[in-house]
Length: 177
Image (tube, rainbow, N blue to C red):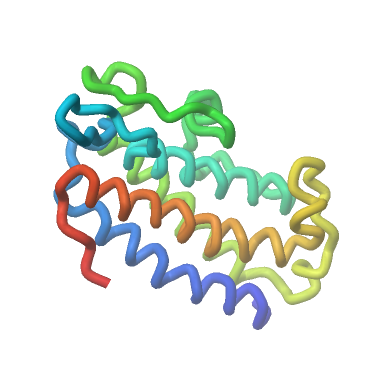
């Protein structure tokens, strides 16, 4: 266990706590809905909670793969890549037929993030200076440490900001910080 991994893992804890607080008042009736506004009820193009938590659920598995670790224990459904990968559109799902139920997505997100943080915390510091070998991300995140920090912290916080805004647009109160 090294200092770098511990720092990355520990700084992810407040973000995961915030992810939990954002879940309040989100259920099957609204998790995959897009908000509307104005007299005509025009749909606001934004990512809803189902999409964000589903999207974030796939990245721990990707981090495992980059580290050469087996992600099978994370139990990330194969369908999540097709539904939630970067660049996939977030669709309004009024009938609950396009996306898996929110109550199934959230545990996949939790399990993946907690496991990835534990894995990162267990690594020696030398692991974090190794080059990122992922073709898609190595230009922006050249080392394993930079990528791990982004995926467990910045990436999650960025998308949780979308959920926070979505909550307000849906008429839900803000999450306590």
